[in-house]
Amino acid sequence: MKKLYSALMTAFNEDGTVNSQGIREMVRYNIDVNHIDGLYVGGSTGEAFMLSTEEKKLIFKTAFDEANGAIDLIAQVGSLNLLEAKALAKYVTDLGYKKISAVTPFYYNFKFDEIKHYYDEIVKDVDNKLIIYSIPALTGVALTTDQFAELFENPKIIGIKYTNADFYLLERVRNRFPDKLILSGFDEMLLPALALNVDGAIGSTYNLNAKRAKAEMNAFEAGDIAKARQLQKDSNDLITALIQNDIYPSLKLVMEEMGIHAGYTKEPMSHPTPEMKAGAKEIYQKYLK
Ligand code: NGF
View 1: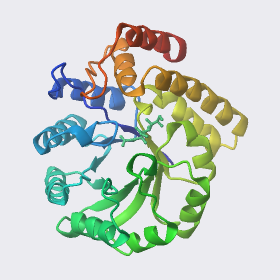
View 2 (view 1 turned 90 degrees about the vertical axis):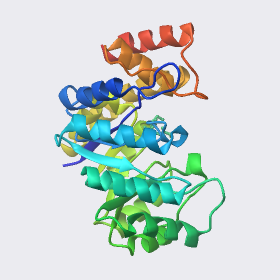
View 3 (view 1 turned 60 degrees about the vertical axis):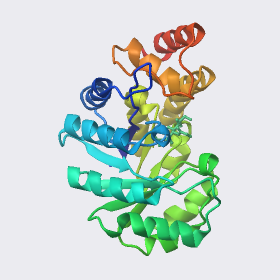
């Protein structure tokens, strides 16, 4: 059975501080209404790369407490500061997270040996399993099939969060590592990823659109490709509208329309303009009601 994970957002107050109550509401909504299989905590959608270590810890703890064992949780601990990544890996493991993940280190054009060292170090002192977070469009780091193979030599490294539109590489990786966990990261490309036999998906828009995405997965599994294609089209109408309205603040504005206190994005991401607010209201009415 393929699994669907929402990439958890972080609710911020207008001044950029973390709003724990808003995080709790989003966790609850994902469990009670979306019936989600799990949450990816501290990733891009969580705006984690703009946060302090203490803020990240608060978010990991709040999500863990609120979920209370009901769903699978993956903690994204990757950071350009390897000492921070290691400390967070230990922190979330001690809390009880059963899976961790780490973005490929970015910005400094690290050599592959350095990337391998980074992953081996993150898992070295923790009894946990790690999913590589590969997102070349944002990191500039595009790992090859052979490089994934080298990272998988470490038995604690169990899979890939594959946020990449390279389906040739996805096919190569899927077939070379049939036992590894591969979770697709681009919501608008869920159907082609399912066709290549991913184990599930993680994404930002599932916070709002889990029901349709699950129906698509079920239709695909049942061999009803026409239905799956129609559902992907419907999802992509929603995703396109979100992107055109500025996706990060809009995801939160639409959640607010649904009565969930998702709060603000963190600057330098934009705060909502009146036009964005009107756009989000329209998106909710048109695609989600
Ligand atoms: O936010 C991005 C940036 N991608 C997310 C997802 O892959 C990131 C994706 O859902 C994520 O899950 C996380 O780390 O928190 C997109 O928002 C969606 O497909 C719309 O393009 O690429």
